[in-house]
Amino acid sequence: MFAQALARRLSRAGVHYGWAIVAIIFFLALTTAGCMGISGALIVPLTKEFGWSTEQISVALALRIVLFGLMAPFTAALIDKYGFKSVVLVALGLIEIGLLGALVMTKLWQLVLFWGVIVGFGTGLTAMVLGALVATRWFTARRGLAVGILSASSASGQLLLLPLAAWLADRYGWRVALWPPIAALVVVALVVVLFLVDKPEDVGLKPYGDKGDTPAHVAPPAAIGRAFEILFESTRSAAFWVLAGTFFVCGLSTNGLIQTHFIAFCGDYGMPAVAAASTLAMMGVFDFIGTIGSGWLSDRFDNRGLLSMYYGLRGLSLLYLPSTTFTVYGLSLFAVFYGLDWIATVPPTVKLSAAHFGRERAGVTYGWIFASHMLGAAVAAWGGGFFRSTFNTYLPAFYVAGFACLIAAAAVWLIGGAQTARERLLEARA
Image (cartoon, rainbow, N blue to C red; front, side, top):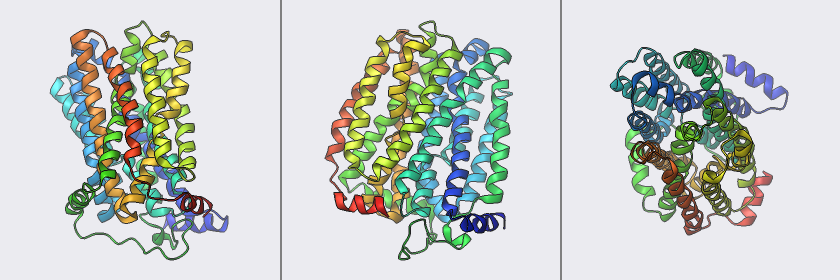
């Protein structure tokens, strides 16, 4: 009832309700991504209080990342079957349980359970595939821009809350740092209950920019089976393997490495946790700009060229990082350069998935590709901890990620073009 009333009011103002859905999912992704990323600011406090090694903590964080990624294709199928609202509310409940449980944990297995398993499953249900599904279902025109906005919220949320978490952990203890995201989850749940709807037809609309020839979405009969069916069909395409492989590198060089280990890495060079977290927040601001810009560009230019540029620049920035001075000023160049590129790969990857696998299958296919992204992130999350515990340095992990990005920059050209320049121009003008 609230959604229909808001949709009518927005329609009278000339605003499609799809943009309201983007705003809701933006707020949701910002909050849940913050819950996902906050652990990066708490590795050192946990080590000091419980005596757990970086590698031991990294095992729990890597498990969380694996589940976060592996849930993506099933999330897409479950949303197709049961709708956005039901799946999102279950996700918010799981994340809340995981964070509340972490407040009372005293054993390593409890860290694995609460932050690894429960938060991993919960955040996996609100992964970036959610934004891809919203953009695909609610938008015919400006789809790349919608994906860019929603991708930016997810990545930036993992970074922007880190300074607050690091400051609270430093001043009042790591448990206090968990209370802001716990409270934010309650607010998000209320917004979802009141205003989130599954498809344009629920509020009497067609997708934004639709000319009237797009069929209404029909829920499939079997959610989980459909996810595996689409995986089997997609693996016959070389484009799937290239997109999955390059997205593996994307996760390896972002969530798993920088988000998880950057604060501890800077600490090895004498940089305080709050200052390092502030550098990450700066990356989050520039990521927001870069990812929305990438969405705009992906509607207008060859997405393979964009991906090649993004991976190449990211690789160079990671190879440059160890030679910088570890001060806020010294890291500013890296923060700007890397931040603009943090998750800019998402809009062109989503667009290529839709172009090669079709609108109805794009969400689940991208879910599997995103699962590969998070497997790469899990490898880096564990690998960074392994190198730090075994060799007392993070440097090999950064060099491996940098060279992997350069390989990905070349590999994207193995994808065949699915759209002509004229088709991309017509879509951008729609």
